[in-house]
Length: 208
Figure: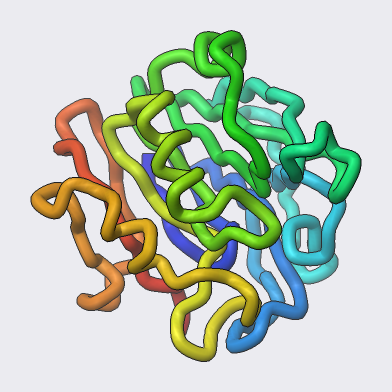
């Protein structure tokens, strides 16, 4: 399974030539609106920075190798009263299971952790304000215990929503020996197999 970071909370996930796009966006400072081709798109909720599909060309292919599960959660810690619902997407293919948390705004219950099950890859928001903050994200990671953690929904210099925290706030809470700064090398994709070592992978934004 190959994961490519398109910025904010948007990822291109490919398995056997089939492409899924998660949470395409518009109006993110420093980034062009999400555009490209894919076989399918999944959106965690109905906000502009997670559901902008106008510039995505979808093939409509039906032969997806992915098994997809969905979990309904909330965009805030008030049961959705502040920002509404949010949906976690869990993708499994090729012996790898990935969860994209969308704009998760609260800690998961023990039942939700159990329902999510073992994860190889966790795409987790870390920027705060609209989601869990760095400490909250770390608590979610500890509860789910994925092999690979990929932070998203943060600010980097002039890129990203100005109210978000930088990724470094989250990285300061992670095991230093497992942090891989692919972004510093301009690497935006990570191919995950059963043998990929445990790590916190900070990916560069593709095409920037």
